[in-house]
Length: 205
Image (cartoon, rainbow, N blue to C red; front, side, top):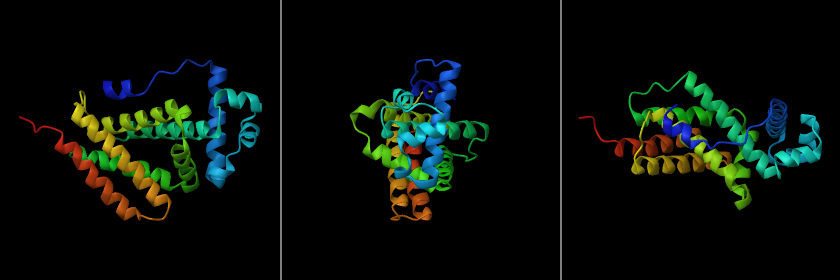
């Protein structure tokens, strides 16, 4: 991972081993319920029961269902990032590598459409109280893209291009989930916007 990618993921207060295990169970329960029934299936009481924690404990970790599902998306992206580091994209150019990376992320979400819909709806419904969690999702996505490009010191223009790529990927996911775009259309849009990376990268001397 590049230095910028590492810096893109904010530090979180350290948890004890027991607290981390409890958090993992909660996120797993959230993902399982969402995978089966989507956004409406994720009820805080059911999550607590599935995770084996008290309802009050769940609310101490995640103040609302929206907080929980946004954190679930960040967790899913983190797992994906680990997989991508083990099996990086093979494209020759930056645009090709980013497009390949984002399509792999898209296909991972495609395999769990109810979960994807629940997480995206949570991001859409998130208000200012969820800003730190939403920012974490954005920074995780940025880190994934920076790794794909291999940028050690991205310029402001390159970071701007990354933000536009993120917005397009998110929008493409929404339009696919709503049935307004096919996988082929999503692929074309992502490949098109990823060319911004090449436009902001100066040619080798």
